[in-house]
Image 1 (cartoon, rainbow, N blue to C red):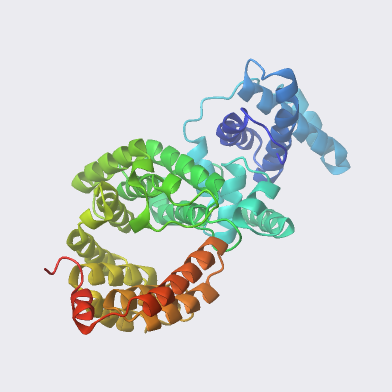
Image 2 (cartoon, rainbow, N blue to C red; image 1 turned 45 degrees about the vertical axis):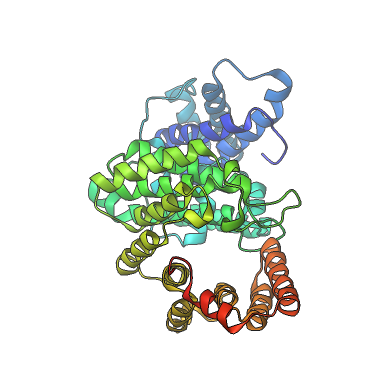
Length: 429
């Protein structure tokens, strides 16, 4: 599916896991069935724009993919007997059999614990997202052969483990659900802020992550962390229209035109996390969603309830400590208690070896130093952060901040009194 398919792309991506589920449930052999579905999707992308969609798109895809399976078996002399038995048993189905759990079973199969996380991500995008290898490679900013190898190895590994295509039992589902949500979280994050390359975000990845998480929530409505993850995605993605300028330049949260945020997504995410926090045991995704909701509910940046955000980060640091949580908490400390307190917290946080060389450490330090009035040091750390950044829009933004801070230093010297007021931070007067 490497070519354009306007109008049909959402339908094909929606049908991909349903069709794959029917074939795998009927024939087994996940790898062969997945290849056949990809060929059927490619045929649809080629034929439907010219001839129009069939009356039964799912049935058309199932029939086409089933024929591809027959052709594959026919081409292998060792499997001719199997192909004959298949043909004698029954003709290819023309419509999908009821299989409410097919997408759920596929998602858990793609996130099998025997697979490495990068392979889980690639296979999930392929099998449930309906993306071609080339599309996945573009979305993840990886060479196409690398993605193809990951998918091939993942299929071979699933076959070697003898994993069965079925929705896992409740105990097994509970054990594997954290891996599933982590994969969806990684897909969303890579789309929202790409780890490297010329673009700030990859909308196709965030859209797929939201779509798949929504499906998972529909099937597991009682899972608080699934609901929290969906709310987090909605509340974060709602800001996307305001995150970049027409030239692709980054616009930080405090400077965004909040009138451009997706109000419907903010409303849905806020209602979802409010309901979930009242009903389910609290988890890390729910806390992150609650933080996002506090940001999104502020009509202006200066109206942000930073004490509430800091309290939520305190809970998150206890429940799921990590280097990025520590850095985000530093910012909340600075905005609540002042930049000097933030710098002390940063000195403690950066002792974590996981933050060694991380671009956000000098970026946060530069921001806090700028708050204290030490523009010279702030400019130096902005430049260091820009050097470490791999994402081009982030590089440009950090370089711009360094230049702007240097210009302010030469144009508007900061007096000791002003420095003292800035060090106390917002909300202290």
